Length: 251
Ligand SMILES: Cc1cc2nc3c(=O)[nH]c(=O)nc-3n(C[C@H](O)[C@H](O)[C@H](O)COP(=O)(O)OP(=O)(O)OC[C@H]3O[C@@H](n4cnc5c(N)ncnc54)[C@H](O)[C@@H]3O)c2cc1C
Image 1 (cartoon, protein in one colour):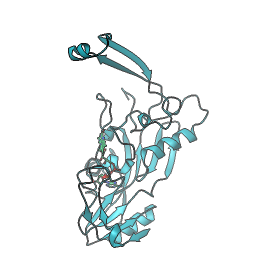
Image 2 (cartoon, rainbow, N blue to C red):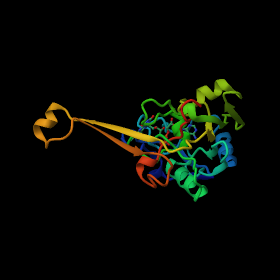
Image 3 (tube, helix red, strand yellow):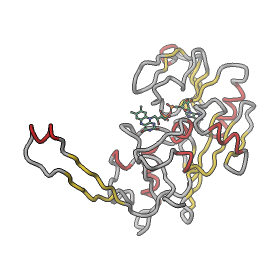
Image 4 (tube, rainbow, N blue to C red):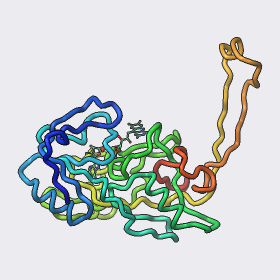
């Protein structure tokens, strides 16, 4: 655990809009469950906020005069059940790190687990921040990430650790996912049933009358079949490969 109190580092901001410059009291970097519990306990009685990748543009990661927890070093994979496709990760892991892990852990396997959805325009969100925002991916017919979360471990304001899922502490589970850090600090998340099989993406390009007037002659509609499937073979390291896990339809 590292505590930073240097004045110039106390101004925190989100990385996209840069509209939320805030003066924190201190930034505490946490890299383990022990460090997270200690930081939460130490901050009792004062204002505590939890930051992941700092992309949310509403400034929810920071509070004026607060202790800001920087969770990004807390980025290990804690367990990977290759049979079921469940993986437990620390909340500070970012999607590119998770994809890298999946590629390395399954190298050479014919059937690989991967992720299906992709956020729009940015990659370096933490899994904890994504769950806390209950984000959605690009797939318009796909549910938000809560659908893909099996369970999570939460550090509460008294420093205790609780597991939340649809079976254990279900009310808290519903509050934490999409709760923007208001109900505790998420230590780990277990996404469930990563997507297993190659799927396909169908893209329709419709040429409007305006386009036809100004551009070269093109067909009115084009269907472009393309594979989005097994990660690493299709979009290794590309931004299109990054996103969140998805339960296969019908599961
Ligand atoms: C360019 C861009 C594109 C985006 N595209 C999409 C999109 O397609 N779909 C979508 O749904 N969203 C989208 N978002 C929003 C994004 O999903 C959320 O902002 C997400 O929370 C970012 O993750 P982060 O790690 O940066 O979290 P942060 O910005 O650091 O934190 C976001 C919230 O989560 C809380 N939090 C973070 N970590 C924890 C933790 N460990 N425990 C408890 N609370 C925590 C913070 O307190 C804060 O309230 C986009 C944002 C940007 C900037």
